[in-house]
Length: 64
Image 1 (cartoon, rainbow, N blue to C red):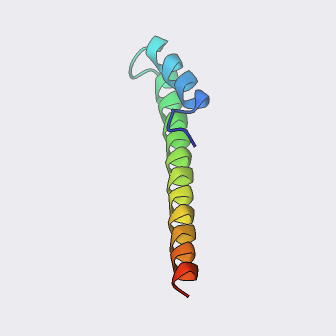
Image 2 (image 1 turned 180 degrees about the vertical axis):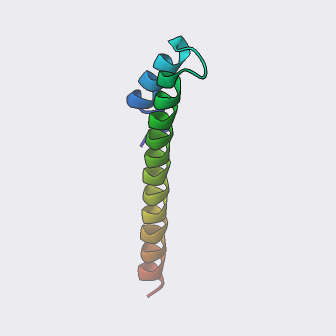
């Protein structure tokens, strides 16, 4: 699994660059970006937890 930033987040950031700060659309896209970033980080955390659990199970099997 690579650690690159997803394409949807990059697209939103590019859109934010062209918008005027404190405009209605800027605020809207900032909220959208926050949702995408939050879901992305949650997916990364879940995958990390799954890998940790799998590693622990593997170690336990080797010890038994």
